[in-house]
Image (cartoon, rainbow over all chains, first blue to last red; front, side, top):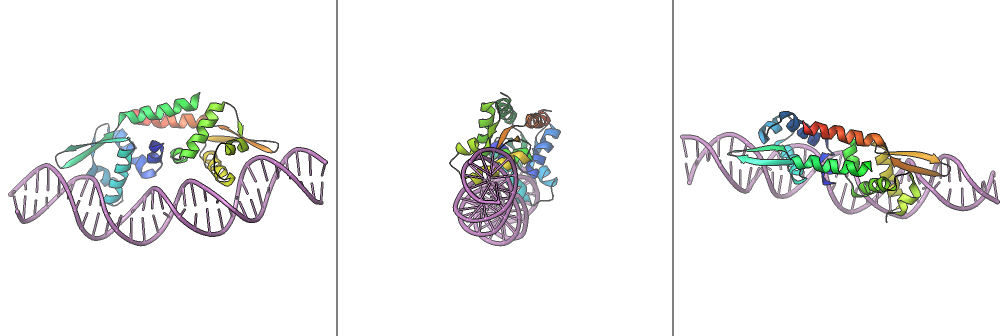
Length: 85
Length: 85
DNA sequence: GATCTACATCGAAAGTCGTCGATATAGAAG
DNA sequence: CTTCTATATCGACGACTTTCGATGTAGATC
């Protein structure tokens, strides 16, 4: 349910779509650059997605790279299965 | 995204689980009976799920029966596909 | 260590959401 | 047409969310 809560915001869905399209980790600065929002705001959205297990983050020197957490897909599919029976 | 918003609440997920388990339409009164919430509150949750296309409703005389809207599953899977590429 | 840049956190303002009691509507039954 | 029961809607209140500017933190570079 935390996953759904995390995905229940247009900005956060856009972040996920961005990362899905990139197919490789993207640094927070690039994600922030994609939105006309304050840096603090995007950082907050990234935190929510991370804590919901939708994104993974990894430090590389000064930068922090974000990517899709594969298990998020599993959890979505699990719910879909529940719906289907 | 409206689907995610609709599913981002514990009560609403429980309503969905209830209907998934029932495998047949359930009247609003029975759904309301499952929760220790005011009738107005459950009615509000049903409205949100209906407007998000998660539930379908059908009048049968005095009662209104709710069931899972099959296309909701499709929309979830569509998003899962987006995640997977 | 001083400084720069990337990112996170804090605290506040504005908006949205969940909840309720009260009230409205609509079909059924007398 | 009145009354009963099922459901929806309204208006209000408190709680949570989104957003921001300001500030903190941590690695890199000099």
